[in-house]
Amino acid sequence: MTTVEPPHGGEDLAGQVSDIEHERDQLARERAEFARDQALVRQRRFTEDQAAHHPEVFDPAEPYPPVDAPAPSRAAPAVIDPDGTEFELTAAGVPQLDGRGNPIPVGEYDRDDDGLAVLDSEGNPVPPWPYETVELHGRTIQVRKPNAAALQAFSMGVSKYTPDKIRTEMVSLFVQRHISERSYGELLVKMMDPDDPFTIEHFGNLMEKIATIGSARPTGPSRA
Image 1: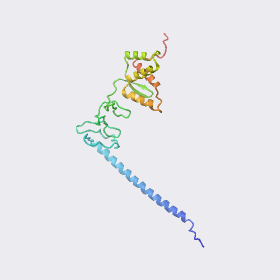
Image 2: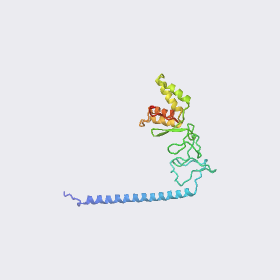
Image 3: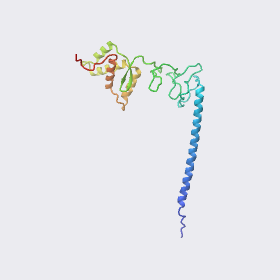
Image 4: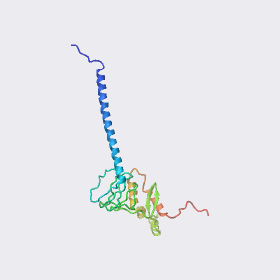
């Protein structure tokens, strides 16, 4: 029986046709994506223009915008309610809430590295730290200058006659009493991070910095 062979090049031609169809589909998708991007650019420009001329009004009785809402542009003013009160905003551009779920009015607060108002354990905004700060391994620690009685008690608590367990507790207590709640919590988080080099020994460095606030530390023995 005679077998009829297909013309040479037939398979190559079919492959070329398939490639052309694939390229056409890809081109159509790219055109659709380009048209979508143009529409987004026009929409963003319109939104920025509206925000620059019409302040956004926030009504506490209305539901909050979705958390993933885009952040307002630099031209957009702060969110305000009908009586003119401005509120703190999150990075997503929505009002920052306190522990009771109420928006936080704009004010002077202690702020984190992202500029957000720091909240205490009850969810209330923390006022700015009114005391000193020291630098420790690239981090700013909010501290208080100890009084003479605290320094004397600490000296007694860490003497060579004090058991090791009590000595360690005295160091921790001294540091805790002379730094802010925020800084203390941040230090504990750093110590629990296996990838962070901060260790319990650094508490000793911090104790020295606190104990010498406002005093000149000697750099060497006197030659007089």
